[in-house]
Image (cartoon, rainbow, N blue to C red; front, side, top):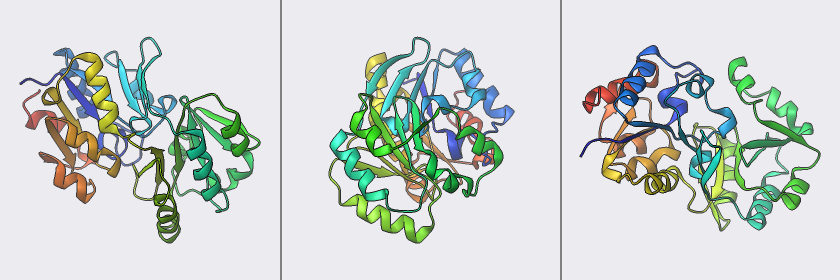
Length: 275
């Protein structure tokens, strides 16, 4: 069965390790696949407002699976095709658990990122490049109280993002969050904790997009490197992971490509004879 849709993780897979550069080989490979009528779909933990600008500029871009599958969007129309947000009561439980810690807390809601001004010093301390810092400021909305925002918003609370935690603190918070009902815990980057609604994952978001488009799992190629990519690697009929992927992704993938810094996407499309 021929491939009709290619689902691509962004950070650690399509993007180089600086989180914003895409090799020309990867861009050319995606364009070649799109020229054959194959849909190229970013599948990312990011919000829509933080899709890589170079991806947003591509003429073939139509659909995106974002916030780890909690949102699926037709980017041409702006129409939401699927959402699986956190319940308000669950979101408040998550917030009350993580709020006492001296960490940066992001709340993703309807494609925007809501943060408190008082937590910006933690953001300034994150060990990231200026390019990534600039990207993380896109789609940002300041609120006086994140808890009050959660209590009052009518929007879809898509995800909590707790970025770049120290190992011991990450283990402690992860253990506490694991005791909650109604959540899915994962990460797109090794030091993150990302909290979605139960059942919200990239495989679920991709499945809903494929159902909308009438595309079978066997007609999908998924490429990803992180914990949050495992379900879409399982869903797709064909799969690949870059050499830098986490152990679980490497075990699940149908083929191991060179690293994300070595045009993993292009190499995978060549391996599967798509280009």
